[in-house]
Amino acid sequence: MSEPLLVARGLGRTYRMGRRSLEVLRGVDLSVNRGEFLALRGASGAGKSTLLHLLGGLDQPDTGDISFAGKNLAALGGGELARLRNGKVGFIFQAYHLLPELSALENVCLPARIARVSPGDAAKRGRELLTRVGLGERMEHRPYELSGGEQQRVAIARAMINSPELILADEPTGNLDSHTGGEIIDLLCALRDERQTTLVIATHDAKLAARAPKVVQLGDGQIAP
Image 1: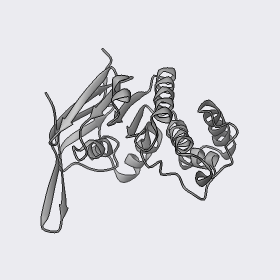
Image 2: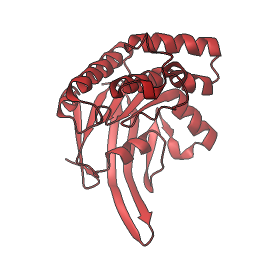
Image 3: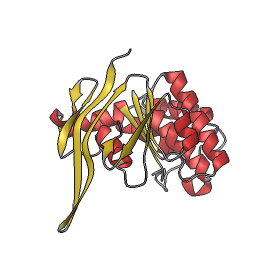
Image 4: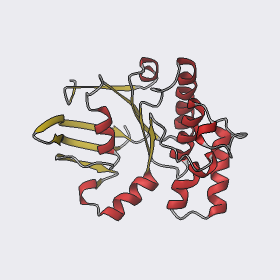
């Protein structure tokens, strides 16, 4: 058994809206080994997205702690946490989150440029990845010129450009038809196998969850036993 890359203990997260509070996660424990492919399932509002954001350092828990490769995320300063997110974690979102004024290639290269990779090297990596995801002829197109499936392929290439140890994907097929969603599932699985990247996917898609060797069910803010 490989060693854990991610370990979460006792995670709790409550959102406050005026006088109201919404407890989204309650005492969540989760361990993800290096190279593992895990699907996180649960109804809307179960806390899947919140858990992914916590695991990737995009948000902080109210209670509990998370370690990434042995480092406690809560102990990292803002700059160190930002560098970890940029270099070690790739995010894929349901809504793609591409910058509309940038081309597909520029969107893919952005994390590498933030990591201070030279423009030439970043562009080379970006072209290789866009070719790998089937967009070799669409590199100069802007997001509004691409279909939903093509935009998600750009988002996948962007997530992979810094060769992260961990990919966190939040409903990556949620905005796609079943055929295009199937293609995205195949692509994610192929890239994960090629690079032995740790992959955690939050999904409603039964076909996508069925591809994962490990499935975790989240309900009422807790991991089902």
